[in-house]
Image 1 (cartoon, one colour):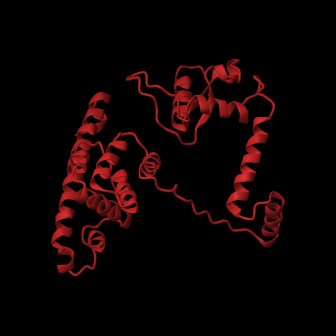
Image 2: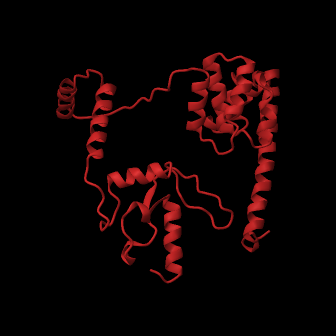
Image 3: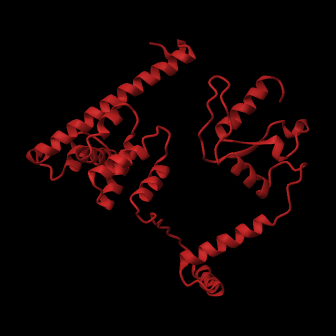
Length: 271
């Protein structure tokens, strides 16, 4: 089959059908891994763990093997999850996350079932899922470990800065500096409508209004883009055509849709 000859709607539908099959296969793979672990077949084959078996025999990368094993173990104690995987209501990343968080919380079966309902939305991100789960299980927020390398002069300057801030701990000092910078930015002069780009204050307002999501809406199906990364502030009426850099004439787009809008204008002879 030559995919280039397919109509757009057929290509999309074929892809959806393949994803349904992919979900069904994933469910079966997890079911098979569950049986392999139950039989301890990996031991008979000379592997000390199912993880090594999955990497060495099944050919998974270490990360892929770990996710599938965690997912399989959650299904083992919460069988209600398996049909959700097959229906595409629960993705592999969130399923493995469920296993890690529920294990940390020493959750009961009833709690696990309730947790499933929290994250079965198809579009929920891993970060959103983790926040919901840790809140549900009443676990502490996950700490982020950040390693910073600096020369001796910078280190001594940092020590003096912490002393001035009255915060001996690095994390507390960084937080205070960030909060101070945030307050300074909020007092900056408002945006000039003749400026070429959105300033800090206007950008913050636009992002807040857009809920930190791309505002592009498909003219075909009315679907709004979900992208939340590397967002850009774009002029609705282009700046070179007299469009002002104002809240009313600005929107938030992801880089991909910003480029698409640009090339559409170019194709229409506007540029």
